[in-house]
Length: 281
Image (cartoon, rainbow, N blue to C red; front, side, top):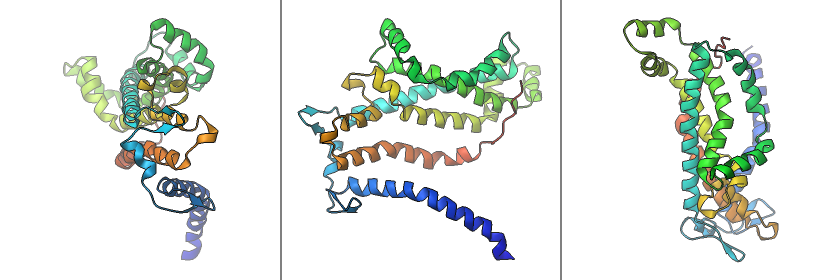
């Protein structure tokens, strides 16, 4: 009987193992290739070397050009992701609270079109965004792309945060208002601490979205001083005849390290997020 009860678990583990095995093999190959001069038969490392990681202390020379410093790209990536996270979370929290608690004209229509705005492909807006950024003098600046990315992400963030605010009882806010607190003070000191898991979730997802952004950065950033790691990788594969796969593997691992560290340190916060948030319309 016990073996029959465990059968579904064995089947689940087998299915999960089969589906994740190709992904694990790709990561293993990436690690081995980054520390090898070449790979025999495509997957057996030939000779251990740190030459592929020399980009950490010296510039990369590709053909007749010298790529910008990897540390410049790393700083730009952290700056872009950090500022995007700050703007998106702050604006999303205020917008989500307004949608959850305030009755204003057009509130229901805004909630109905929120998901539609988020689903609109950003590639269709590239030409319009280019003219706007160029007119404002923000073309080829990280601030310009930060503002564009924030505008595209805020609708979904506000919708998600609204679900967490809906779970906070009205009685908690009324108690604060009766005690003499202003609406802003109630929101900041009473309501926000009750939705910390939701704030942690949208913060993590916002940072990951900024760190992995490529299309907008590649389209509106042209100078090496503003390059990010995602666009840096594109420079390494811009010429198919000159791709150094060992170097590409090392830079890719370097690009992944902050996300791996972030996942390890924040997984407890993600596990505390409630799967179902009430959507009170």
